[in-house]
Length: 510
Image 1 (cartoon, rainbow, N blue to C red):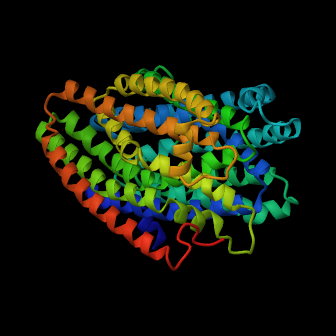
Image 2 (cartoon, helix red, strand yellow):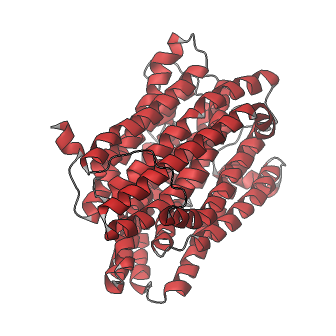
Image 3 (spheres, rainbow, N blue to C red):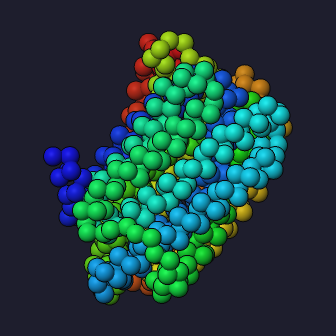
């Protein structure tokens, strides 16, 4: 029964997106549980260490896997499969072999030089914090290797419309991390390295769940060392600009972590908790639709089916707006309740996530909500370019937005760290009076502004490139959705104001 479920196909974009959204929702719930446990079981310094240790392994995963293979493998795999299934099999084996070797070599070298990298990553950490960060980082270098192989399997399953097993991968990844927090952490006498072992376990489960459907689809992974294979060379060409763009994005996160390490203790975790919370709607809406649409758009482009391509693009764009605009308003209005409910309510008694943490995280989430529409549409717009085999344009735009973000980070952190009339108004608007340092809010503010700029640049360049896309229908849909969302927001706001006469609606609990 389980095998039949994992090996079954999905037949429409909407159904596929629903499956991915459902798994994303469950993964999001598990992500909430994970963050709740981290927030309430670990002191601020330990949580900062955990998030900082993720940074470099995630950099490797981001530039080589999500930034490279995921973007480049599927279009080339599709072209090879059109020739024959055997050609696609040969390509896959060469890709698997090359990237497995590359990831092992790269992660091994980086593990050796981790102490030097950590000095740059977290200059504000104490010596003991840096030592612990080094230990966790070295263990976590196993995860990009496992996730690299798993991501290639994911490409095969996406092309074959076997989305069920693929949809379970983020769920099992979170299960592994939660297992590390709940079981391994006490077993290791609360040594933070247990958390790193949980991350590796999650990556292993991410890989294992996909093996059966990959084999069922007819592919037999084997070592193959023909690194001059034309398809592999094509992948290299496609992924080079995308890898550069992904590298820029992750360098951006490294800079954010470095800046946060010099601010008040707990600033890294404040940023990451808020970023994780906004990541749930992005995953549920933006990533789900983009992932489901990519193979369809690639096929339409390969078959020169312009009308079908145009219809799919307009429909998906409007569907994303329909879901995310109201959600953005709700997230901003209910930011304190969301944070207190998810992170501040600990089922095992009094946790370590205090009201100071709640207010700063809620303010950060509120700022992130202003750019939710952009962050949900950016993955989809990037996939549209990838379906044209154009990885350069979105990368150039991404690099620009990252440079802009880094500049804005330094500006806003400095601005919010210096009392002024405007700074006071921002503090008052976000209900942060009494908190001594609010400079960490400069990080989500900078990221949100740069994301909005990236979105508008992608739309502008896409209109120039295609000249067949008609945004008038989308504009009309957007206006209708916006009016409805504003009316809903007014109703929610009035309800909150009335409720505040009887309940502490700004706190929920604690």
